[in-house]
Image (cartoon, rainbow, N blue to C red; front, top):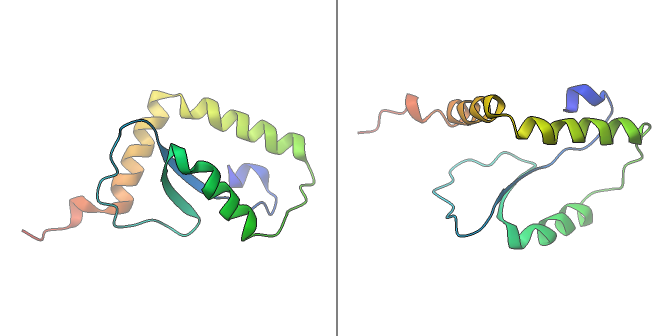
Length: 99
């Protein structure tokens, strides 16, 4: 998404878990990423707003369009599978031989 906008827009990833799901052992969270339960989303959003300067977007309609397209992408099973594989690769658990 960042590449599509071609603007200096700050991005933050919020990985939100809903309902009675349990967060497993999380050993790596990149800078700018937040892992949270749904009931704490406003707290995290306020933290992001408080700790960062407001940004002027030169093309707000383009930002909204790209965000809307991203939501549609999130509904794609193919993209969901690619995302899971990317996370698995990023964590590299298949390359750890500790036992």
